[in-house]
Amino acid sequence: MNSDLLYRIGLTLIPGVGTINARSLVAHCGSAEAVFKEKRSLLQKVPGIGAKSAKSISEQEVLHRAGEEIDFILKNDITPLFYLDKNYPRRLKLCEDGPVMLYQKGKTLLNEQRALAMVGSRNATDYGKNFCNNFIKSLQPFKPLVVSGLAYGIDIASHKAALQHKLLTVAILGHGLDTVYPALHRNTAQKILDEGGSLLSEFISGTPPDRENFPKRNRIIAGMCDATIVVEAARKGGALITAEIANNYNRDVFAVPGRLDDTFSEGCNYLIKTNKASLLSGVEDLKYLLGWEELEVKAQPQRQLFIEMDEPEKILHRILNEANGKLELDKIGYRAEWPIGKVLTVLMSLELKGVVQSHPGKVYSLR
Image 1: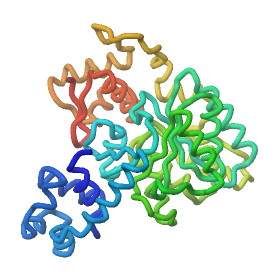
Image 2: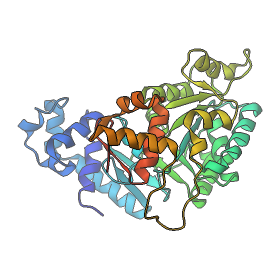
Image 3: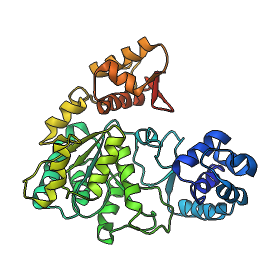
Image 4: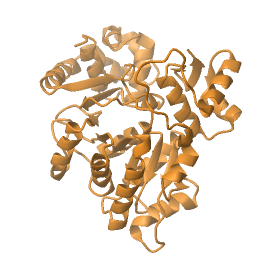
């Protein structure tokens, strides 16, 4: 295992240093290891790093706990993912507050061409559960990665529907990978692993499922996906937090409408009414707004000499080619006259094909 892993994990354990400041430290020092070997006086000059944090870094006490975590990783076949790693979720890499480290149980490729978040009330009704099952069944031709949080209600209904209809699913956890919460869902978690899916967390082992962890978990769900679908939600709760985060990330948000007097449809109806989500009645709405009708391409048995591109991909290829260099995400969207969500979806497809390269600051270029 990479010797730098000790410092990468240690970076996430420094008191008072969050995700954004941790990335800033790496940018200034060059690597996680270099952060711990930098002089305290120079560390204090990094924006957001004060004397207290600089002292904690210099004393390096967090590295002992990081070493213990490496032992846990090795014993339990966990894959650590640093935000600069190739296999780190590329969509999440675009989010400035994306986790510095992720811990993955399972071998799922987290950069599938399509990924959808399914979220909603923990008190799901039969209406919501049936929608999850029927909607996910209709997604089979597109084979998206189905992402949710393993919670009661819509989350677990989405995971189970994905398993039933042979789609890969990833559960994002609000605690360490040494446990499963709620315990009632352990069998489903194991089946996710058995069927090729994954359990994913930014928290080290021993981290309990505390309330404050779940909004952090929700940003991973939103950031990993092309779009977030809210099936049922009350006016306040985790599902609306996830939708708000997805909007802030310039991702598409969809909501399933419900009866006006239904408590668990208030949140969905509110999102639609305030233009924070598109109304979702079925897969056709998703296909139209994400441009997925042009993306139904069967995998080739062998690599082709010339890369095939569909029409949306050709449009963005032409825009980047005419830019003759790097181009910001918002400018690409302006020139294509598309919503940002669709731009990100097509850019991700081009990136997976090796045509486009992403750069810090939501900037893209041709390879």
